[in-house]
Each structure stands twice: as structure tokens, then as C-alpha cells.
Length: 309
Image (cartoon, rainbow, N blue to C red; front, side, top):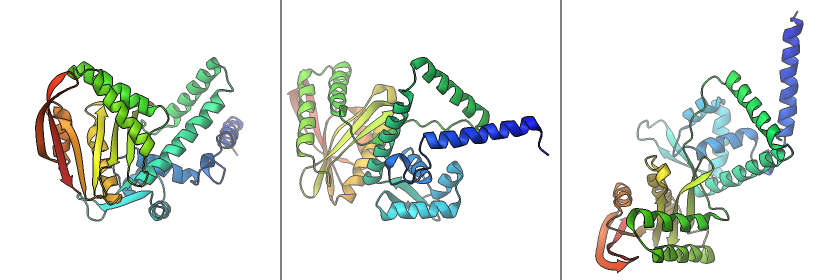
């Protein structure tokens, strides 16, 4: 027979579990009004926080049955949410990654989750919100078997206001780091406005890199012609450099361009942008043209880079 105090504690935990699962809506057929179950949403979340991963790694991180995970991944693949390619390290494994459609699905789910939790917290005064967060931290500290994995950043589609951030960051950073004048910020604003006005979702994309809830990078793919995609406005905030965000953003552009049916990718840059040029070289781009010119208040050398897809 169970000790009365032990039984009381067990029932208290069970009662809290029933309360919380009802409160956050995990018992609904679709989590947060999405087409995903709780398990499917967790898989989407993990995929969004990996550049690539394998089914075995997902099984280990999520502690899911391999057969159950396989069915989830098969459904995602049929819906065009994930892509697979053989692992160069182990031919028995496939590298999994979210497609552009998968990233958009994650962004919608992520935004909805933030909205729902924010709405729940808004029913409490600030002091009680802090009490709640502290109590949850205690639960996590006591029951966590290992420290949570640090997730450095995610890539997502743009939200309202992001284009303003792209323009501001370009204007500020290029003035600080290269001494360019306001005409460069004007150029970025024109490119961003043109992207929004003429956006073709089948052949164009923007990705925003987000870390700890703040924007730290961006890149754009626009249609140059039926066969040629143009990479534009790659930027990484100084606070997030060294994490591979620039390489990841360019890789996403290349992957999307292939899926969209482009045969070649081009980009325009300047010779003094050494970090960006290093990313382009590593991604397989080749310098095809350069020309001295004067713009943005400086004497510069423009460069055109290209690569086949």
C-alpha cells in the first residue's frame, strides 16, 4: 500500500498534468489550430532548429518510437514539408531538412504559439507572470534529465516590420563598417519595396534569421529571368557572426532556387565585402565580372558572381 504522503504527491502531479494539458490545448486534434498533432509539431520544431538532421537523431532527441516517427516523416514528405538527401557520412541515413513550405508551416505554428502563450500571460499582472515563469523553471530544473540544447538561431519567412529592419540594418552597418552614405540605404529600401510589390511566391523568397527573439540576418532570392535567380541583400548582424548564419542563408537560397526550377544563380557585391565573398566562394560561386565605380560616397569595385544550379 502506498504511503499517504507519496500518494498525495502523485495525485498532485497528475492533477497538474491534466490542468496544464487542457490549458495549453495539447488535447485538441490540431495543436494551436494547426494541422499538426503535438508530436508532429515537436518534430517540425526540431527540424526548424537544425540545418540538417537524421531520423535517428530525431528519435534520440524526442524519445519517439522509430516506427511512429517514420510515419510522421513520410507524411511530411508527401506534403512537401521536408526534403531528404543521402548522408555523406553514412549511406544508410538520410539528411532531413524543412523545405520552404515546411519553414512557412513552422513560422505559422511558431507565431500562433507565441500569440496563445502571450494571451495566457496577459491575463496575469507582471509580478504573477514572473512567479509563473519561475515556477516553471523549478519544474524544468527538477525533472530535466539533461540541460536543454542551446538553439542558436532559426530561419523563417518575413513578418510585417521585417523589411524595415532589413533597411535599417543595411543602412546602419554599412555606414559604421564601410563609411557608406545614405544613398545605400535608399537603394536597399527600393529593392525591399520592389520585392514586396512584385513578390512571386513560387519563384522568390526572403528568409529572416532570428536568435533569441530578435532579427540577426536576412537574404532574398528574386527572379532575374526564367532560368536565373538573383541573390540579394545578404546581411548578418555583428552580434550573430561566427555561427554560420551567412552560409546557412545562402544554402537556403540555393536549395530553393533548385526547387523553383532555376538553372543559374547570380549576385552583385563589392570587392571590400570580404566576409560575404568568402561565403560565396564556399558556396560555389565564381567571379565573372568586376568594374570600378563611385557610389555611396566611396570609390568601389563592383563584382558579379555566378554559379550553375
